[in-house]
Structure formats: C-alpha cells, structure tokens
Length: 205
Ligand SMILES: [Fe+2]
Ligand SMILES: [Fe+2]
Image (cartoon, rainbow, N blue to C red):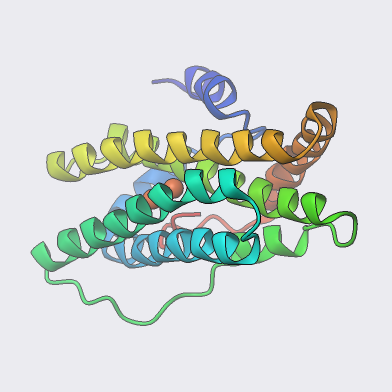
C-alpha cells in the first residue's frame, strides 16, 4: 500500500485527520517486545475505562448495555496480548507513561452538562480506539511475523467496532449537531497531538 492509499484508508475508515508516520511500523517491529508490553496496558486501560463509565453513569441503561460486552472484549484482548508475550518469554513489567492519552485527556473540555461531560469521555475513548485500530492495521499488514499479523488483524476489527460503539453512545445522549461539531474539534485536536509527538516505536500510540 502506498502513502496515498494509506492516507485515504485512514480518512475513510476512521475519520482521523493525520495518518501515522509510515516509519512507525518499521520501528515498532524492531521493538515488538516493548510494543506488546505497552499494548497489554492499553487493553487493560480500555477495560478499566469502560468499567469506570458504567459505574459513574449508573442511570444510563443504554451505556451499560453497550459497554458491558466491551469490558469483556477488552479484558479478553488483555489476556490475548499476555498469551503472545508468554509465547515469547516477555514479562509484563510496569506500566509505561502514555503520553498520547495524557495529552488527549488534558484536551477534555470541563464544565457543561452531565451529558456533555459524558460526551467528552466517549469522544476520548473513540479516538483511542480509532488510532489503535489504524496502528493495528499497519502492524497486520507490514510486519513479518505471520502469527502477529493475524493477531493484529483480529484486534483491528474489534477496535473498529468499539470506535462505532462510543460514537453511537455519544449520539444517544447528545444532539446530533453537537456530536458532529465536537467530534470534528476532537479530530483536529488528535491530529495536533500526533503531529507534535516524538516518533517512537516502543508505544502503540
Ligand atoms: Fe482492545
Ligand atoms: Fe477497544
């Protein structure tokens, strides 16, 4: 896939404004141990984030209905990554600082209604799913380990589904025009975060 095709795939699939630097996947492949460790924690944080949303918005039945299965899927992903690590004799180690998520978190808008606050968290989660999906696609297409290519292909499909879940939930609790406007702002913010981040192959994001 050439750069233009990659750019178009990113835009049409996920709405992301800036495709990942094509050098990332090559550096990541050389640091696959670090990628797997970081990835394991991404899955754990995804599960934890959904649990936290369910607990903090107990009155939102639709949210609970949609996110309970996502918790199970993210936890299954966590276990899948640990299994791949076990096969390769890689220990989990301590969690790394997640600069990407940290910067997105700092971009959240404070105040507004309870639903708007929920929206911020849903958009944040949706963006992390979208970027993860985009990077898993690169790994599934470009790395030489056949087993890991399949592994990342499967995860890419699952994370794309979660991205849709979060956007649909935002539409459930907020007016369509608000979602459209705020999501467009978030996409711009995410592109700036990616653009300003150091290119490193030891992180999923
Ligand atoms: Fe996941
Ligand atoms: Fe996910």
